[in-house]
Length: 172
Image (tube, rainbow, N blue to C red; front, side, top):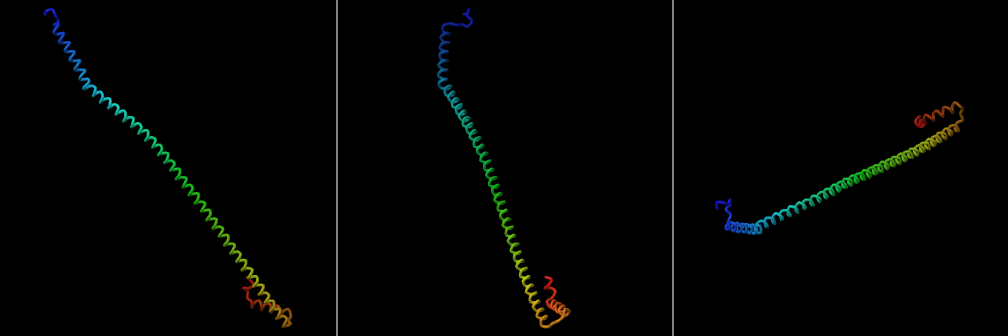
């Protein structure tokens, strides 16, 4: 054995082949029993993570869609509220205009009625004054006729009659 470096002999080669066969068998057996279930566990874990990521992505997309729908509904609600307020303002202005117009019409009717009443009172006063003048004239005519008098006496009678009637009658 002095000339060999490793000391390779037939026994050692058989032992090496048996050992290689045992290692290969052990590797195959352990691969089947341990590595394949570990690989399967890792594959399932990757699939689960991928499905959760896909689910999260779809949920995020739905959330974005719901948010955009919510924003659009919120804007439409704001528009509707503004529209309702605008219509209410228009109705209030219309009602205000109607009330003011009615008040003006009522004021015109009151003024017209007052003017008519004033005209009636005025015409009544004119009629009363005419009646008073007629009665004064008939009294004066009666006095003038009953006594034949001259111009001085007639002027004095007119003056007396006027003083009897009073100054207020002639000034109004």
